[in-house]
Length: 233
Image (cartoon, rainbow, N blue to C red):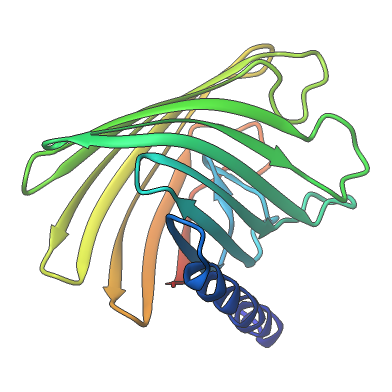
């Protein structure tokens, strides 16, 4: 990771932290949180979005305290054209009953500087999880009637599952898998496994291995190790 990316990471942290703090101190109900990260490769559903290069990311969220939430998240990207940023906006409702959790919502993906058409798209999603004590499991489904980069209004369904387990107070291991059912395009499976070190009030460090069976993407969905350094505030 070069010094420019670390500079952008610091700039994002400097810019977002006061915003979250000011929002938190305002009279508006609910809780504001923010996050910034730098990753060695931005991988989305098994496919690199940054041309296998590092990316800077950050987001801001508001939680009503009664289940409803809204937020936004952005990342630098590299598609080989004018697109240089992905901007996500989402809203949903989540809750828990004993060890069972649920989350439903709406997510919009925008690519503001993209010269090509068909990039922007939206999804509805649902997740359900259960904490078994030594391990937690989550399954999810995302649906869109007009998938990214596809101009024929082809629908897409993404199925996902994640298993995670804490090891001590600061470390956890997790593994995930997903299946992309793409109308008019080859369906494929992706998976990942890794560990996360969380140093409270300081940073989180995640090392993760990604792979997929999508071999027609010219190397953009091949196996790789990704390092992520993030900070929440």
